[in-house]
Image 1 (cartoon, helix red, strand yellow):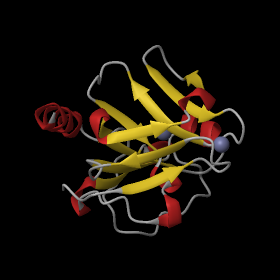
Image 2: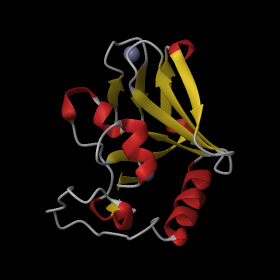
Image 3: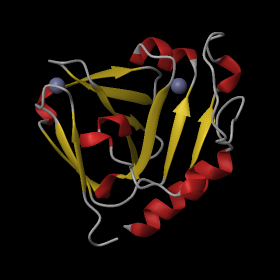
Length: 154
Ligand SMILES: [Zn+2]
Ligand SMILES: [Zn+2]
């Protein structure tokens, strides 16, 4: 993992980030909140240990809380919704892997990718791939494992 390095950023380039290890998982979320918030049928979020990402241009980010404990950060200039934080997960954060430069694969393990909240997807969205699909959130034990891994990492 020592030589793992990928870069990303918002559309206007004011907010940039570097990931120094592979994200633990990538979820394709189909919930109504992501539809409204991202203005797309589904949104991709990657989970990573906070110590494995370096962010520059944080002063250009604006925060938006979708619940008491969950906060999105987006570029105030171009609107790219690029990071998210859950208060109860102090070791982890989320970045939106579609914002990696050049559309590269985020590097997460093949079994760490699924569709979540499929039960509330838009009626006209078609899901044609063979990734695992969960009606609601991914099982809690996955998140617990990820949190433990991330805290052991660092
Ligand atoms: Zn921007
Ligand atoms: Zn969602």
